[in-house]
Image (tube, rainbow, N blue to C red; front, side, top):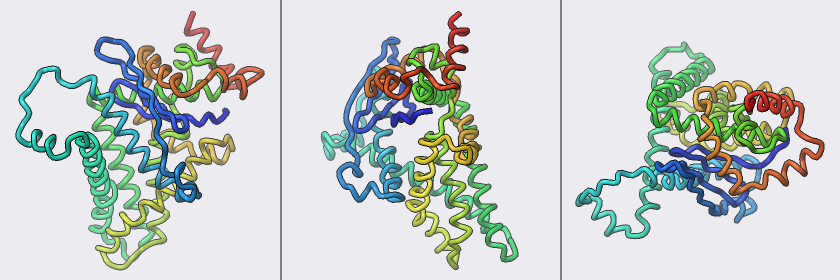
Length: 327
């Protein structure tokens, strides 16, 4: 495997792919054609070198991935809005009058703040609240472990619940297509539908792995950081989020660039968790993912530079599978 530097996110009937400052959003529109938007996003760390320092860069990367993800999601959703014209409500008119051209940015910011607040309550405070209701007879490490296990159970239950809806299931299929495209390239295969289809839908740089790593590292942190008083413990769950995110990002960064057996073993639980958020895509979804990649990444030059003698061992195995699938 050769690190490519590209990453992405599934959106409504489409894929967002990012490579450096460039990002693209490819969407399968209701008329079955593919719309591709390409733009640039200059991150805070690119404008301020100190923000690229280890453990700090992960904090900004996490926040900016949410911002860029919301932009891509808003673009993809615009193709599936209700065509029926409805008279705007008084509240909608007030919003348009008050914020004008900045309304979309305001709504995105509000959505992000609301989502973050809900995540804090559901995934940080609720597990702590449950753990606080149980008497562990002074075994604080056991309490921190129990809290972490509850957090993981809530996360799995949440993913299982939302994946029952058709829209989320299709989004998870696009998520799988995104991973398959990256795996296809990073194992030295030409970016074709057949090659992508037989590639793995799990990838070590996935956001699902990041969330799982955050939950595991939070257990270790909360075993060590044990403030006195319930209110302080609740506050610590918020205060330590940037620190935990920074440490988790560094691990994910190493994992995404390494084939070390130890790193691979440590990455395996996070990749198992991706089974919840990735599904096997169909060929139409793979085509969308390929268009998103092509808009921001010269995969042919990449293969020529990194695989001058052909694909790696896994890539050759996948090529055989692709040929069988094609026949």
